[in-house]
Image (tube, rainbow, N blue to C red):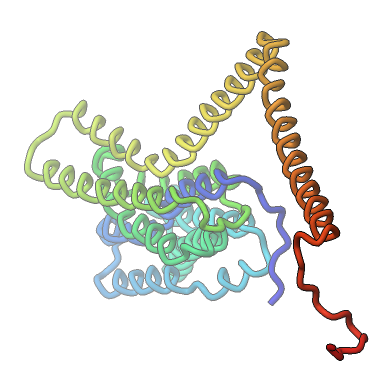
Length: 349
C-alpha cells in the first residue's frame, strides 16, 4: 500500500509534542466508555425497555470496535484528515442523541438512534487509530512503549469522563452528550496541527528512556489520583471549591507529557547561551593578550628549531664517523669485510 505523502516536521521536540497531544486525543477517544453514564436517561426519558437498551449497548460496542476503515485510511490520508472524520462522527452521532434526549426533536425513530450511536462511538476508532499510527511511526524504535502509553491514557479515559460528569456537568446526561458532541471536536481541532508525521527518532538520545519513564510515571500517578478522588467523592460530601480544585489538578496531570518538550526547549536554550558566552570569552581573551600570544608561540618555534638542530648534529656526527671509518680503512688500520657483489665471480685465492 502506498503511504500518504506528508511533510515531515524536523527536530527532536515535535515527536514529543505530538505524543503529548496524542494523550489528550486518547482521552477523548474513550467516549464509548460513557454509555453507562447516560443509558439510564435513555431508558427513563425516551421510554425504552431493557431489551431496547441492550440493543443500544450492542450498537455502542459495534461502533467502538469497527476500526478497519480508519486503519486503511491511515495508509493514504494524513493524520489531520483522520482526526477530522472522527470529530465529525462524534459531532453528528452524539448530536443526534442529544437532540433526542433533550427533547429538542421529538419522536426520532429507534433505528435512527441506533445508527447515531454506532456513528458516535465509531469516532473513537478514528481518533485512536490516527494518534497510534502517527506516534508509532515517529518513534520506530520504541513502538511498544508508545503504544502502551497511549493505550494507558485510553483506558483511564473512562475515569476522567466520570470525574468531569460528576463535578463539571453535575451528573446531567444531556450535558454529557452535548459535551461529547462539541468538546471532542474542539479538542481535536486544537491539537490537530501537532499530531503529524515528524522526523523519526533514531534512539541515539540517551535521555529518551528517561522521558518515557517520566510519562509512564505521570500516567500511574494520574490513575492513582483519579481513583482516590473518585472514592473520596463517594464517601465524603465535598464542597464545590474542593471539587473544582480536584478537577484542576486532574487537568494539570493530563498536561504532564508536555513537560518533556518544554524541558528540551529550556535545556537547549541554556546550552546554546553557555556556548555563545564561552566563545565570546575566548575571543576576548585572545584579543586582550595581543602580542603575548605570539610570545607564547615563539618558545614553541624555538623548541622545534632546537630539535631540528639536534637532529642535524646527529646526522653530522653520523656523516663524520663514516668519513673517519673510510680514512682508517684506506690507511689499513681497519679491515672491513665486504659482501661479494651480485653477478661477480666468487673464487677466492
